[in-house]
View: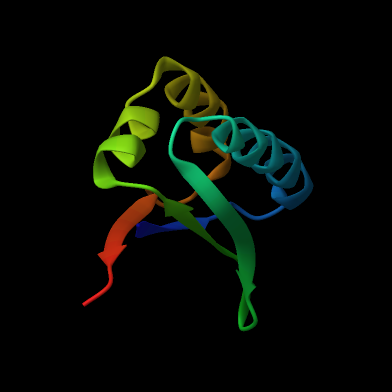
Length: 94
C-alpha cells in the first residue's frame, strides 16, 4: 500500500466552488482500481491550503488514476481555482 499526499492552495473567494469540484473528484477516485480510502484536510493556519491524503494499493494503481482522462478532465476544472500548482507526494512505509 502507498499513500498519496495532494496539496492544493485555493485562490481567494473560490473556496465553495472548489469544495464542490474537489468532492466530485474524490468520489470518482473511489471507483478507480486500487483506491483504498481518502480524506481531505484543511490547514488550521491557512484555510485555503487543502491536503488530500489517500491510500492506494500500489504506485501503478495511482499512476493509472493520475494519468486517466477522467482525472485530467476534473483537474482542468479545478486548476483555474488554484493560485499555485498542485503538489503530489507519493509516500511508502519504511
